[in-house]
Length: 432
Image (cartoon, rainbow, N blue to C red; front, side, top):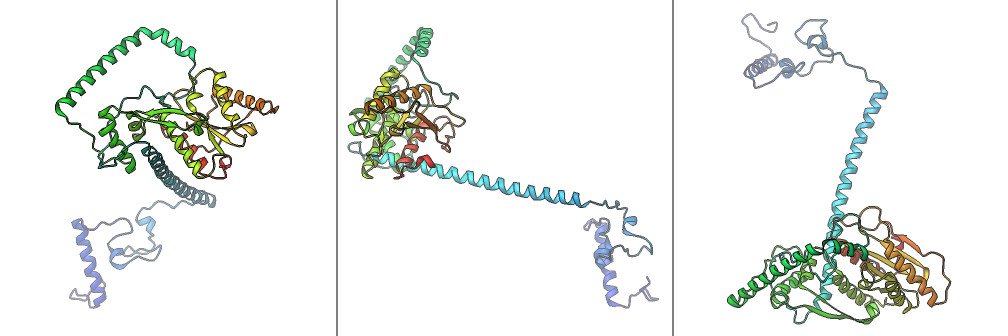
């Protein structure tokens, strides 16, 4: 009112404009369109912030804290401010480190998947050369799971701790459950016979063979072709893939074969058996030949040394015989299955040293049976070359060995270990 004349008008246009704005804001507050809170009232919104410590329209001597009933500000010591700043900084750094670690884990996971797919491509290109009249045609989805091949040693680590399988344990188990197992075996045989008769009837009556749909299968094209070949040729005609592993691979000729379930289980990243590992080692031998590295790296047949392949003495002699056929400079790769799990041993006979790689997570120790076999073989080798040798063979566990994510990939990891080692011409695996 102090700005109004006797007629109630405000002569100063700037003041009149502010007064009009105040009236509009008050109307909006009453209508709930604008919210006032503490010092942020209508006057502040219309006239702008007041100087610190002052108030408009309430008289002299009144301070904001008194009028708005604000709490008395607390004094914060320098130490407390420093601690809070450090806490905020530490939290920010922690968040950055967690984000970086998560990003690195995702990158490594993608890289591992990429390497596994590349490894399958290598394996399948070699395997496809063994198949007569192989025709990579149009493909469709993943095949349904096949039953486990009873003629292959599958390796699964789902049991946690892996122990050697001894003859006395097997005999005790068989003696205790013999009758029950015989009944189950008879029942399985009857079910298989009925299923076979049913399939034969469908085959002869309809002359139609249904195959899977592979269009959404995430796999290399050669793997899809191989799966298609299994379902269109091997499975309907009950065929095997038979071939011979040359003498120079394991030191002796070896006839072997793949069943259709070996291939489909490999395609599905399921448990793999000794035959798949042997075929892959045959492929790696071809890689060594192309690189002129056969004098540097050799292979020991895992089927003759793994658990339940004979007595420790017999298996030691087989390993020693393989070592004696070289000049001692070679390293020998020896996949070993102590029972439901694959590991890799690298034997360097001349230095009386053995390297141990186990893809299973946790602190792993060498299987005692495998250790006894190799120790005895190296002693026989020393005798053969007329060398006294050291008292104890040196065993080294290679640190930084990649670990399998679940319970069925051990065979794939062991195959990958062998490939990575021979792809380095310097064979510098000890320092990686």
